[in-house]
Amino acid sequence: MSSKSGPPGDIECGIIRSVNTVMGDFLADAEALLAARLERVSLDDIARQVQPNHLHLQHGAHDHG
Image (cartoon, rainbow, N blue to C red):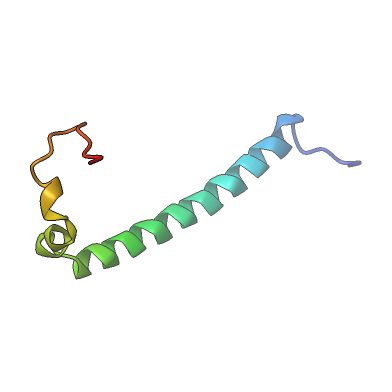
């Protein structure tokens, strides 16, 4: 580049700003998708998916038999 508007770090800062913008957009999209999904799923829906024999297991316990 023949003309510089500031210190060499300015280019990196521009890249970081661009990445931050893209990641911010990505997170906003992910949050919107999650919110929409949570509106369609109830705790009853989740509870129905649990297998009855796993309800009695304590945290960290595994039933392999």
